[in-house]
Length: 377
View (cartoon, rainbow, N blue to C red):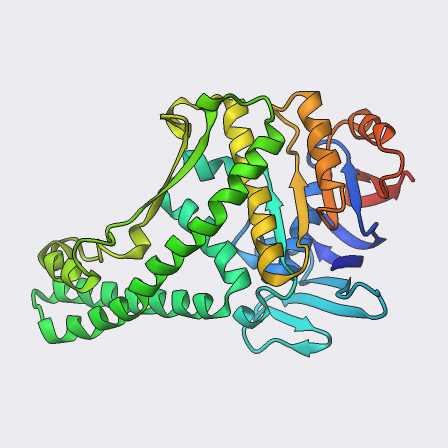
């Protein structure tokens, strides 16, 4: 699967763009602020019906315009015999619309997983340095692309959680508490929450070998003391109380705080290298390597479960990596192991020197200048 052609109208700093891509490696080169990342975000929109960088859709409309339109033409089979159109459009004051093969998607959830994609950006450092919500979203984002049942289960849990929290706040404001009313939402949280935790455990058991494999590929000179680890931290342990018991135990505390304090929405991941926490003791280079391994393992997991290679977006990933590791990474993602790849960089000479080492690797280099693309090869 790959995107053959992209057309943009009034999206961020692009007034209009019509560009065709290589089905292998595409490099977007230019100064900071010229639109390289915005183009990657357009590709992300077509896969996930939203921006990776700005959750307010209307703020992605070009200044002075009333709408944006993102259109892509995808090849979904090995023969490349048919181009499938995909479109995401937004008119100010109206609802966002998503179309796949000229048919409007009834829900955005229905579209997730059709065009698998993995993105790596400098902001991903929040996976290590940020709060637990970021790490949960990382895991859930992978699982939702490959398992529609998990996505629906997660959406149902989130709705029940919102209702329970709203009820807790209402009870606090009214100085009143109703056990029977809360128990209705407890049942819903247990119904969806326990399977979510079980599914996350199974996911991590499958994910860890892939992650360890890619960590070594990116960092082959890592010694035995640098073995990476991911520990799943959940209140719902396999041997202790059920979620129902945890909710009952936390009932008074929840009533005082006006929100639900137990459940899979409080789960976290602890990242380590050897005996140490990556967050507290990892160098910038170690954190970067850890993140790249996480994202490439995400790619491999999706490929294995969907039977297709996701599109891979690498935004400014060369910062804090030495040239040898940069070359190794590009040669890796440009191999048959991966599919279509997009790479942004500020230094033209850097990517060109890498391709000189692999002259047979199909690729295109684009120069980006203030919302315009020029093909260099």
